[in-house]
Image (cartoon, rainbow, N blue to C red; front, top):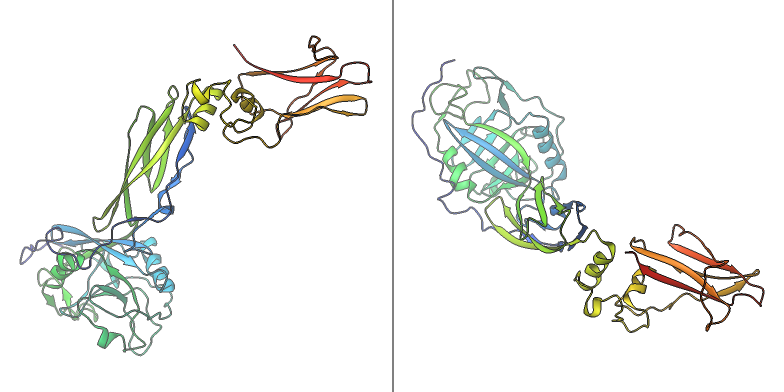
Length: 425
């Protein structure tokens, strides 16, 4: 079928006209976590929707792409999942099944409603009625105010809504709230979509095409011919209500990307240190929020990484020095590291003590899950005598990191055990 040029040229004014409702910017409702990852590794992904949200879209969001002649515009809808769960699930099912693709507005009554969801094009010359899912129970609760979207249904049957839906062009509450059990409002148009897009669509001339389909008494057309080009075509898609952009203050140390709302990080394999990620969150109405996440990349050297974690430095100086004892519990940093203790919190258990049992002298110590150290248990008969490893059995760490050193004890032989810890060259 040959396309007929439009009778008039209409321009979408979405970026120029005032918003339908005041927009509330995105908000941080759960703190973003400070992240630590080892050099050369990736951090566990962060789902940004677990931390950021759009107060204007408490449920699902829909992008309705509308074509008017050669022009297209995106109309954004916020769905009321919490108050109309069955209706929203029904609407989303039509979207995910592809039945709300290549639809068109087939009923337009200026000052009242603009309706779609009944028909779709198969190609440029043919159309079909949308195959319906079972009717959805009526969930009327919110008023049919201007800018809301509601379900169409059969007169005299409150529970007959299927695929048809409409946009309220005016405050229709006095009529539609009290008719046929009330028409279920299940969402609203966001931003300046009413003035910038919907009102433009509602200004398109209507025609009586009941000779083609009985439902087309007020079909909006750009010319007096029911062709795909003359119809106001729509395609609906579920989208995220928020979009994200991320940057790293030090991309040589940490690279960051956001895909489908998931933040992913990768650390340099050759560097260590701290940086900051900066996240810009934008809602469907243009509101923005800036957020930051501190990121620490640990050194591949476990002792240096331990100093980073506990002292925010990689240098063996000051309170972070191996021989320092910042928590004043008598255990220097290197030994705290070796035994898996905290260098900034005084140890309540102290150093491991020897015990005599079943003819052996033994002590058990916790060995840190780290490399770079040599652990040696030694024994002596007298604290003034030389220490030796003769007769000492040093076990291997168990699943809890506990290691036991033993030496035979008969009351006349070795009386003392000790642990020495040295840094590997």
